[in-house]
Image (cartoon, rainbow, N blue to C red; front, side, top):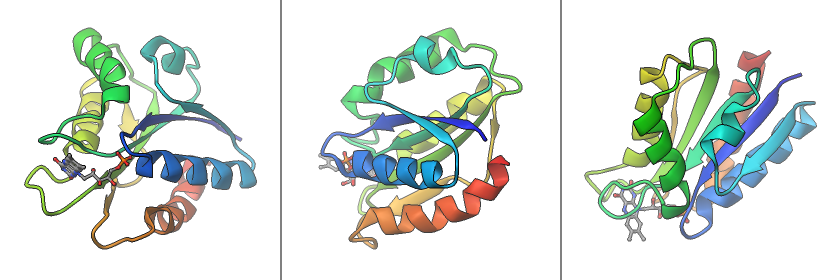
Length: 149
Ligand SMILES: Cc1cc2nc3c(=O)[nH]c(=O)nc-3n(C[C@H](O)[C@H](O)[C@H](O)COP(=O)(O)O)c2cc1C
């Protein structure tokens, strides 16, 4: 059983709904979950055995949502040593933007720069193709759960 810390970036609620859905599915599979919204870096990292699952949309011109900005800025400024830590990324975006899913990609890169290891592939949900983003996330999480052991 693992403890998954969901780090949520959402302006209008879509990513938040995805995180809540995924959290429920993780719990059904026997894992513990904590939803961090807004996420604080120290709080998220205080569980050294925990797995971080970033669930974020992208806003502005490829920007991290406001509620995730403090976490993102702290991580970028402090670059903690996250060797041995594991994380996953679910990114929501719209392919009409050149900056498709840039917030999720930026968080992914930052965690990797800090030495953390991503579990599985990053999920990128194009909201123009998925009227209900939770459905795409549900498929992905079914494949992700066996990877976390
Ligand atoms: C003002 C605005 C700017 C956006 N900018 C981007 C963008 O740069 N890249 C992208 O992939 N999606 C962009 N989107 C699409 C959102 O990421 C998408 O609608 C997402 O589902 C919103 O999730 P949320 O409700 O959790 O914030 C933008 C949406 C809005 C309304």
